[in-house]
Amino acid sequence: MIEELQRAAEEAWGWMLSVYLGLPWWATPIFWAASVIVISSATSLAILIVRAQIAIRRDERAPRAAHGRADQGEYLWVFLVPALNEEITIQDSVGRLREVEVDHKRILVINDGSDDRTGELLAAMDQRDLTVLTRVAPNARQGKSEALNDAWRYLSETLLKKGDLAGWDPRRVIVTIVDADGRLDPHAGKVAHHFADDRVGGVQSLVRIYNLRSPLTWAQNVEFSVFGFVFQMGRVGWGTANMGGNGQFNRLQALNEVAVPGQHGVLGPWREGRLTEDQDIGLRLIRAGWQGRQSTVVTVDQQGLNSLRALYRQRTRWAQGGWQMLDLVPTLARNPHLGFVAKWDQFWYLMTPLLQAFVGATVALSIVLFATGLVDVRWTVPIAVLIYVFSIVPGVTGVLFARRTLNPLRIIAQVILAHGYALYSWLIFPVVYRALWRYLRGSKSWAKTRRELIEPAESAG
Image 1 (cartoon, rainbow, N blue to C red):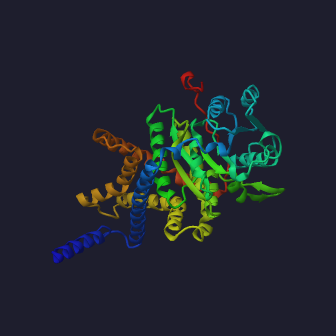
Image 2 (cartoon, rainbow, N blue to C red):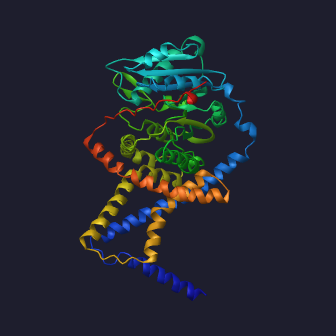
Image 3 (cartoon, rainbow, N blue to C red):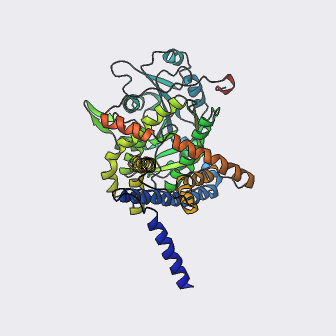
C-alpha cells in the first residue's frame, strides 16, 4: 500500500514537472512563479472560507439580545454623508437616515461644492437633526478624504464643543459614513454590541445593490456578498476585517488616534489623495492596534452601475487606490498587534494588485507563445481540468459560500450563475493595468459616477 502511494506521488510529481516542458528557458520560472501565486491564493481563499463559516456560526449562536438595540442608547451616532452634485439621491438618503432607530444621532451632510440642486434640496429639509457643512472653492472638490476631514474637524471642534452634543466621550461617538446613494438599515444600532468591546475601532456593514436591473448589477451584488461573507468574515477572528466605505462605522476615538498632520495643524484621519480612503483608514486603524469587524445583520443598500464604461471608470479608481496602499506594507508587516498568520494575510491582501498584474501578464505571455508557435500545445484532460480548477473554481466556491443556501436546487442554480460571475471577474480584470498606468503617471483625478434616477416606489417614505 505504501509503495503504491509512493508510486502515485512520484507520477503526480513527474506530471507536474512536465507541464512546462517545451517552454523557452526564460519563460519557465515566470510560469512557475505564477503557479505558486495561484495555488497560494487558492489556499488563502480556502482558509478564509473555513474561518468565515466559523465566525458566522458563532454569530448565529449568539444570544438574540446581543443583536438587539439595548446598547445603542449609550452612543452618539453621527452620520457623515459626502455629497457632490447628488440632487437625484440626497433626499432619499437623508430621509432613510432619519428612520434609523437610535436614541442619539446627528446627520452631517458635506455639500462639497455642488453646482446642481443639492444645496437647495438640503436647505428645504427639516433641520432638527440635520447639519449641512457647505464647502466652497478653492477648498471644495479636492477629494472624498478632504471632505471627510473637514467634517471630522467640524464635528470635533464645533458640534461636540457646544449645544446639545457637547460633552460626548469620543469613545462613545460612532462616526458612520453613508454615501449619498446609500440606504442604511433602520436597525443600524445593532452594531453597538461590537463597540461594547473597547478594542473595536471600526465595523463594516454588508453592502447590497438595490437597482438590480441587469446582469452587470447582479454581478456587483454577488461581488459585495463574497467580500462580506467570505473575505471580511474570514478576517473577523484576527480583528482585521477592513472598512468598505459605504455603511462604515468608526469609533471617533480611533479616528482621532490616526489623524495625520496637515499644513495648518491637524489635517484629519483620512490621508489626502487616497482614492480608496476607506481601505486606507481601515488598514491604518488596524496598524494602530484597533480591531475591525464585519456585521452580518446590518446592511447598506446602494446603486450599482448598469454601464460597463462607468464600471470600468469606478473600478480603475478602486484599483489605483489599491496600488497606493503598497506604501503600508512595511509598517503592517511589523505590526506588533497581530500574529504571524494575520500579518501574512494582511501582506497578501495588500500585494493583490501586484500579484494580479503578474498573473495576468503570464496569461498574455502564454497567448503570445501559442500564437507565435514557440510552444506546441498538446491539450489533455488533466491540463484542461487544471486550468478550470484554478481559473474558475475559486470564484464559484466563493459565491456558493457567500450566497449561503442548503437547498439542492438553489445550489445547482448558484453554481451555474457563479460561472457568470467568474466571467464578470475576468471582464473587469484589465482595470489593474489601467490603474497601474495612472498610478505610475501620478494621476489622481477621477470622474464622479452618475446616479440613476430613483423610481417613485423606491424613494424613502
